[in-house]
Image (cartoon, rainbow over all chains, first blue to last red; front, top):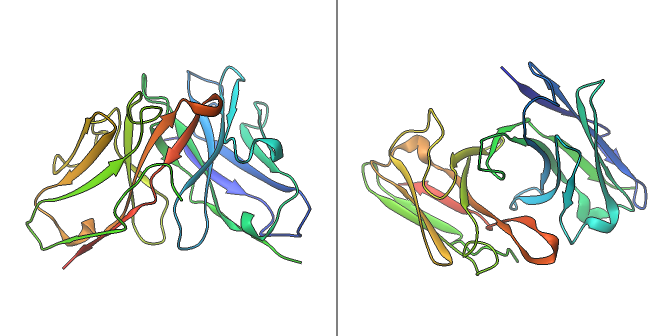
Amino acid sequence: QVQLQESGPGLVKPSETLSLTCSVSGGSISSGSCYWSWIRQPAGKGLEWIGRMHTSGSTNYNPSLKSRVTISVDTSKNQISLKLSSVTAADTAMYYCARAAILGANNAFDLWGQGTMVTVSS
Amino acid sequence: QSVLTQPPSASGTPGQRVTISCSGSYSNIGSNNVYWYQQLPGTAPKLLIYRNDQRPSGVPDRFSGSKSGTSASLAISGLRSEDEADYYCAAWDDSLGGHVVFGGGTKLTVL
C-alpha cells in the first residue's frame, strides 16, 4: 500500500530555509486526483496546515505562511517537497506530509507520514 | 488561537458516550465539510470522520460525526481505554483565498 516518509535536516539555523522531502512509495504521486499537503505541529500544541499541491499542479497555502512557503512535486522521484524560508524558532515543529485522496473530500487527510522533527536554532 | 474552537479536554468512563464540540463560522464549518482526526500519543493523526459524518473503512461505528450550522460534534459511544487521545476537527475556510483550518484539539481522558 501507499506509504509516505518525510526526510530532511533536523536542525536549521534562524533566517535560513527549511527544506523537507516527502517520499511516496507503493504508488505514483501523479496518479488519480489527490492533494498532497504539509502540516506541522509544535511540541505539545495543535496542528497547523501549511499548504498543498494537487496532482494537477495547483497550490494553496496558509495565508499566514504564504510569503515564505513553496510546495512542489518531483514526479520523477515520486516526492513532494516543502521549502520554508526565513525560519525562526516559531517554526520548530514536527512536520507531516499527508494525502487527501477521497473523492469529494478534498481535505480528508487519509494517509500521513510518520513526521519529521525540525528544530530552528543557532 | 485556532480558527475552530474545541474544548481543551473531555473525559469519560469506559462504556460511556462522550461528545466533543467544534465551533467555527460561516466561512469554514458553515460552508464546508468537517473532518475529525484522532492522534494517539507519539503518532501521526488518523482520519476518523470525513464529509461531516462519513467513516473511512476500518473506523469503528462507535465514532460518529454531525454538523449543524457553524458547529460540529464528534461522538464516541462505548468508550474504551484505547480511545484516550487528542482529537482535532478541521475544515476548509473560504476566506483569504481558501485554506484548511484546524481546531486546537481536545484531549480525551478515559477515567
